[in-house]
Image (tube, rainbow, N blue to C red; front, side, top):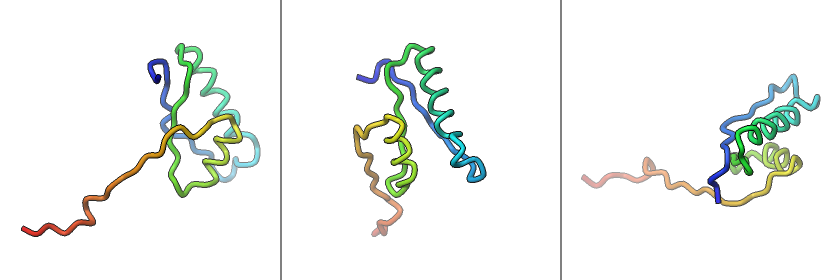
Length: 80
């Protein structure tokens, strides 16, 4: 159930700040704020090819719960 979930839309750490726990601090603050809103879950997406982000989030307690798929309609030629 996602009734009490919040969505973490974007999180980005500038390369200059990487390796200094900036991402960890952002996640910790996101968790704190989510709890203040009464949420029991945080949902986010990471691009399939973004291994760095996926590993980062997994390392910080996030688990994969679904796979998003897309069909690109622009790749189909119209026969009109």
